[in-house]
Image (cartoon, rainbow, N blue to C red; front, side, top):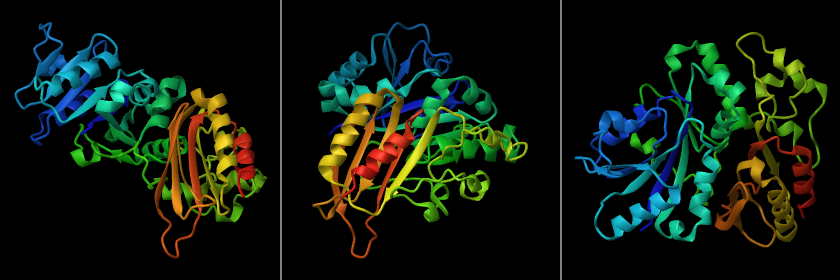
Length: 365
């Protein structure tokens, strides 16, 4: 059995520690190993654990295990897996808490690139905590914060009670444009049920592509297959979320056309983009194109996923990736009467949307 791993990331002061403490102390019968970057700003162990110990791994009385990273993550994970195999430690899953400014990308990649790690662990999901009160500032000032949003499989918004409903709404819009595939949940003091934290299967190749339905609403009239909407009428298309793939809203009019409290700042460098087509993909062309894109833009591609209608198979083809690492798999059959439509979402930093659209269009049969 592989040990599921969850990466917990989030803005400084967003309440990662509060959430972790809750998860750790709740009597849920699960034994969790927490791996913490010990140079963290807010150390969980000062409060929960005895801080003057030199022990790297501490077993708590409810069966949870805490350890801080003194070497690199790889070494720590291998050590934990080895101790579990030998029966020295008993735990069911791992949560890795990154520091407030960490980029979850390299942490996620560890689970795919390292054979020894991949033999013991399965990366389940990346959770990102966003502090509603300071989010706008942090998103404006720090690319790391924007990247954390782009990487997320699930976004938790804390401290929402400290902002007005309009500010919260504007923040949720903004996060949705950066990452339409991560559900958002407003949480109070880390009160989250474990079902919303664990076994989310964010990295499993499954046929679920959760793009927020609002994000896709009303966009069928300017659909793909070569039609791209930059005509001016779109400037006011706020009703349908400024067009489905976070369209080219970098013209200045956008920053000011929603009145106060509604700054949609589409000038965030982390953007998402949704591609849909009813025509089938040619497998060879698509593979060549995606391979080339990942090769060139990999470092800027945070997360991408698609459920594809592919020539030559009656099964859905599922692909997803993190940075340069891409995997694909045959999913379930297309259901009787189900519309066979390919959907892809790309989340990245300043991705070349025109090149992507053109290349994908040319990979269709």
